[in-house]
Image (cartoon, rainbow, N blue to C red; front, side, top):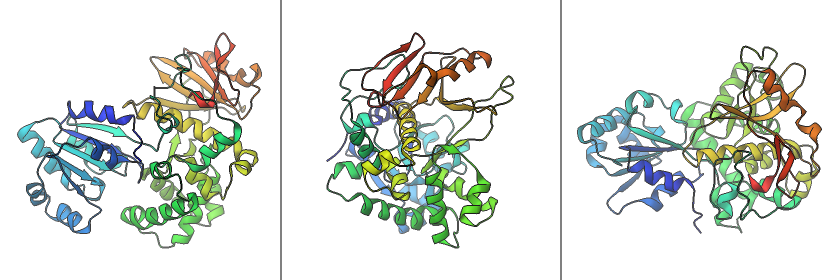
Length: 401
């Protein structure tokens, strides 16, 4: 069963505008599937997962592009960055829209030489796992507290929500409801370590690296602390820094930067770590049921991870990039999420509570002291209705994001 992705319409628009369209994202989030579902009959597909094709692309990129001509879909382009200068030459010689479709399991800015080769020629799109909107066939809109659309927003009870969090967002798990979650994620980790990690760096102790991944999962929605992680995994701080970069590069985590400016001198400057997929995070932390997860020690952190990833998806899957931050200072005043859009900062608080209170958003006033104009705020929580908390803040059920 194919689940329609909101990014598909952006792919169509980008193909009619740019010679090259690149979709980046973690393994198995559906990058090549989007292209395959949109592909014209004359467009050939090749994947660099194939060792023979990968060798040809790396060792003789000119011959590769003579053999496989546009319109062309190249899957897993990060395995052969040698192709990029030759794609540039092919584009510049013809300058036709939609010549190349590319997928890559690494963020665009981390692929060696890409930005120099294809600047101005490529539309860069980022894909995450399924959003909760996509799971129920609903249109996805960029999230802002004052533009919520309340139609077709079924309320989820506590255990339905945490079951959704536990299963995660990889399309294969939702296209095949009978697939065992544990089997999927154990296979995913094996493939991830054997393919992606070994392509990026030599890991001498794979068991210790897996321990590190579990350690990172246990710290989702927390400040990134290299020293503590190094002690837990029993490796050097530099090794932890390298491994965190690997997780970010391959799309398993994202780092939420802190907001600070010249006025916010007491603000912390350490990012927060979030897993991109709550199902993988829950599996790594050995949560097996929605009930135990909903009432366990990680219930608040995993809910925060879910909400922030859904908000990020609402922009990325509409082809938009938006600046997002959190705020925390040395006096422990904190705002979970700040969305910067149209010159305004929109403050968001995330609570595992069905009884939101004014006191929950008391730190929103910090934005005035920081010299930044504020938009409408929101408290995203387990309350079952969308309504104002006060004239500056809305209560938004998790199901409405």
